[in-house]
Picture 1 (cartoon, protein in one colour):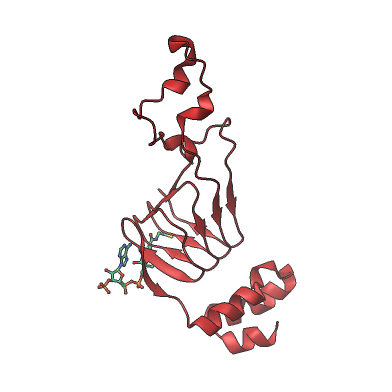
Picture 2 (cartoon, rainbow, N blue to C red):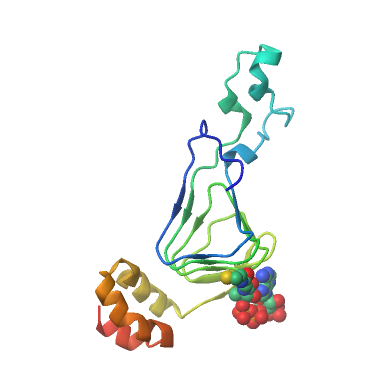
Length: 160
Ligand SMILES: CC(C)(COP(=O)(O)OP(=O)(O)OC[C@H]1O[C@@H](n2cnc3c(N)ncnc32)[C@H](O)[C@@H]1OP(=O)(O)O)[C@@H](O)C(=O)NCCC(=O)NCCS
């Protein structure tokens, strides 16, 4: 987590069963020097030195929270920017820079990220999003693990 200032109050929400590789970074709103002003210099932070009366909050563009769904795999040294939502079941490739929302069950990569492919056909994605196996009680998940692991979608669906 980088550039996370308590005065910005932005948050990172991470779902269940996510895998986050080493070097993955989340850049929060305090990283976003304002772009509509005539200077990117963060004058609002130096209120004592410059006596301008601006609030430190005015130093950054606020793009919102970062939200990661469940069963998301974030690759080595990926960078996720403020305001981004990553859907359930997605895969973020190594060294990806995620600037926009990622739809569920999509593999993305590159700078900025582009879809590489969907993980499953639309119908299966919709069914998995409805099932939300990650919210099942632990005992039911344990029983389902062999089906999840082997990709036995029909048998998993039958447990729903
Ligand atoms: C994204 C990823 C999951 C794709 O795996 P895959 O589907 O087996 O990938 P493929 O090798 O078949 O490549 C598919 C295409 O995506 C491209 N691609 C793969 N990884 C990419 C990445 N990180 N960034 C950009 N493009 C990528 C390939 O060049 C290929 O493009 P092409 O079809 O134009 O030739 C994988 O490449 C990756 O980045 N894994 C993360 C590994 C990691 O960081 N692990 C950390 C430990 S948990």
